[in-house]
Image: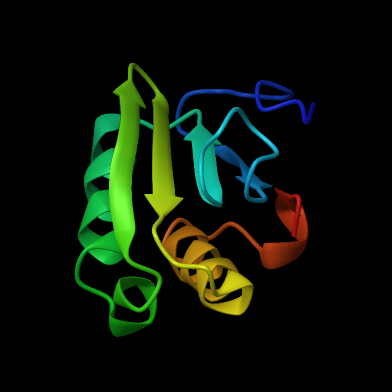
Length: 101
């Protein structure tokens, strides 16, 4: 399993993209750890207002302390990847730093 907690520090988020079925029985999803409250608000705002993200049909699947999980209710792999990149770009996280992409 991919290591989500590796190098996790509040305010310096790290992210993992999971393929369909790779993590439990969930759809494709993005998990981000190390978020402060402002970063959480930014992630949710982008996920549910950005047109690129909306094409992937995001759903907030989990929210606990410094961790968020956004699941994508689409079968379109590319739309999910693009949504994940848009979300993380808002946090200044580069695509190459997202484990699983």
